[in-house]
Structures are given as structure tokens and as C-alpha cells.
Image 1 (tube, rainbow, N blue to C red):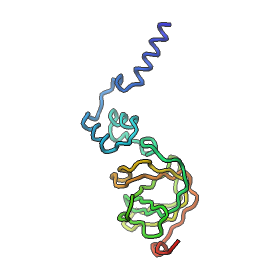
Image 2 (image 1 turned 135 degrees about the vertical axis):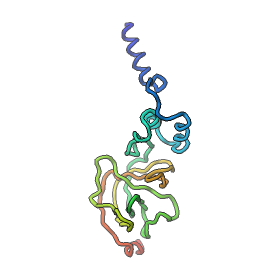
Image 3 (image 1 turned 120 degrees about the horizontal axis):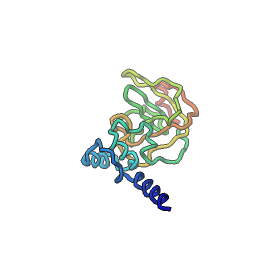
Image 4 (image 1 turned 120 degrees about the vertical axis):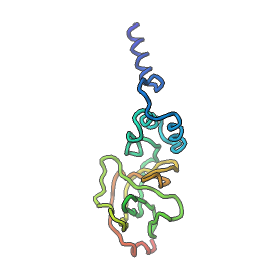
Length: 171
């Protein structure tokens, strides 16, 4: 019985960060800044970064932030070098200066968009229909944290490239 108790105690100790014997690579001040910058980040990701550094940050936003339930999205994706803006239900130019929240578009693990994003200065536009999820809370997402939300494509239904002239039409 005593060996069982020690095993349980050891397992409990290992599951708590306070018992972690690794040396943190982030200072307490850096962890506090991380919490202030990303108030909705899950504790598991904060601890991962605390002990392994910022380069350990998972690429998949759904591992670190609460997400909405999956739903159908239909809108315009504007892609360009270091840019990926999704504008749900809009027919005008999906610009970074649009009124309202900006959403960064990315894909869930294992999902690939069958289109090449823009790599140069000129943006490309795609009309997308997909099932996906969004971060629940407004925050700092995407490249350089410049987007208010991040939307993940879980299942692409359709995609077609459109020209800016097509986005001036009424729906």
C-alpha cells in the first residue's frame, strides 16, 4: 500500500508546475507580460513557453486559445506577403483598413488550401466557403499579432479566385 501512495504522490507532484524541476527560460516579468498580452491564452501554453521559450509556441491557435464551435463561413480571403485577412460576408475589397474586426485566416492541422497564396506585393483574393472555428475572444493573432481574431479552416467546401472588380457587386 505504501508503494502505491508514493506512486500517486509522485504522479501528482509531476503534474503540477510547482514541482517542475526544469529551469524556466522566461523570467517572471516576461511571463507576466505574456499573460497581459494574451489574457485568454491557456495555461498549458504559457507554461510551455515559460520553460521552453517563445519558439515552442504551437503553430495551431486552437491549442492555446478557446475556439468557437465549428460553423459555416462564406467570405473573401485576401492573401499577400505576410498577410492573410478573411472578411466574412463582404463583397467589397477585403482591406486591412476595413471597419470592424480583422480576422487572420489559417488552416487546422492536416488541412491544406488547394491554392497558392500571394507571395509578392500584390494581393490575391479568393471567395471561400468552409466550415471552421474562430478564436472566442478578441486578441492579438496572426502575423505580428495584428489581427483581432484568428479563423481556422477545418473543412474547405469551395474556393475560387476573384478579381477586385468582382467584389464591387451586390450580393
